[in-house]
Image 1 (cartoon, helix red, strand yellow):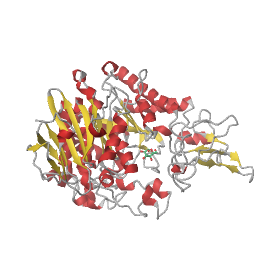
Image 2 (cartoon, protein in one colour):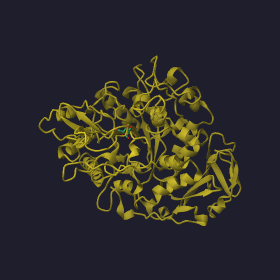
Image 3 (cartoon, helix red, strand yellow):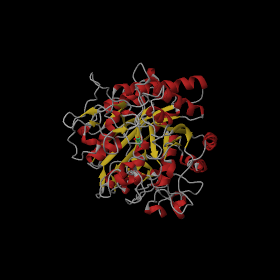
Image 4 (tube, protein in one colour):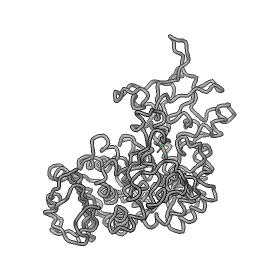
Length: 593
Ligand code: GLC
């Protein structure tokens, strides 16, 4: 339950030069209460296909995950979110589910899943599943029954006759809507003589949320996996759950052209005002939250969480949190650190904008979260630049709230290169050999690097489902664990600091851009040491910063606690806050004592 009596308004005051922003109120009162587990959690996303293969078929599986849960424990992870593990023809690698109540045989069995949960419980790691509410696979029995108009399933999906083109006299799709993986969002079915809607691949028909039976079925899915002991769900592609309804003539309206691209098959060719971010969707998230809360009330145990995937505008995204009268998602994912640099370039300024976008719009009393990568994006180290790997891992752990790691970010894994012949992602396969690299999500899905051995210790197969990234011999768990200083060691120090520090869990947050290329964050809590994160996010120039320009209350000497991989400074040594030199890419976590 959100504790409204403790709501602390997020106050932001622009300090000197309009650069610094301070959440002043967190120091007051709040430290008296306790935090629920998810509020400061370290979430870790596992892409099961690429994490660990236990049976030598080149594909990761549940037993592989179970065998490496101790690795997660060692990292300090609170909860692992597994991308879909359910029965699927794997057109969209598990996001096309043919049976929501069973495990994909390639990944194992329900008993394997139970063994995974048991081991995770023993280690104190929570398991979160991916809930894919918007669509099923076209191989799902619900869809087959719907095609056949079987009683009770007629309207399980979004069906329409299409419209007649008055000049050609031919039948055409009901509207101009486009799917995420290129081309029309409507598919004709000969047997039923109607089109169905699919916001993703043709093989991913959209479920019809205007049908109460569908709403109930999907709540059943949630309860089923809660009964298997999961700690919550990451809800997939939520903003596309509902579309506008047909008009009085029974026709769907067309989307307007966006002007963003000339590529007529690309979804961004059109605006997405009729097929995304509808108010009905927000209410559905509130209903799922009720399922979570009711379950906990009846069965006890820790809070079951809802994390929502949404790349929507802030005003829409923030509604997922709920409001004064209703609870929503515990955490709608905050993708600003991905999307803002993607549109305006990576810089201290864009990082500040990304942080502002969340902290200045989040409703009072809610919990922030920070995400820098996932299986749909190029890898963080490749996007921000390898030199900024530690800076970004530090940032997401120094900012207030929960933090989410995509597998491999702790190692600084970069994108693998995948040839057109090896390409698997439908988003790329629907394009061509010339353009696929603009669309492909395969590069961030290459197998995890466990060691320098064959297939990076991921699998004993002669071939893995996707090729490995080339740099696995130097960038892997084995090498980085043995090294004195590595991305992995830095990551572990950060998690440990976050878990042990009251300041990082409870403290006020202040941040600014200094010298154009340095981003600085201060976390402070009365009676506890303050922490300062300072990172030179520039490409080549070293700079010297005067931290008192940012915060006059900082002591003249700060202790270095954690440093980025190439930093030549020494941990536990004192550094002048008024003349702190930072090489390009250097990032530090310092403390007031
Ligand atoms: C989400 C998933 C993505 C998938 C899509 C359709 O965006 O993260 O991988 O392709 O939904 O389910």
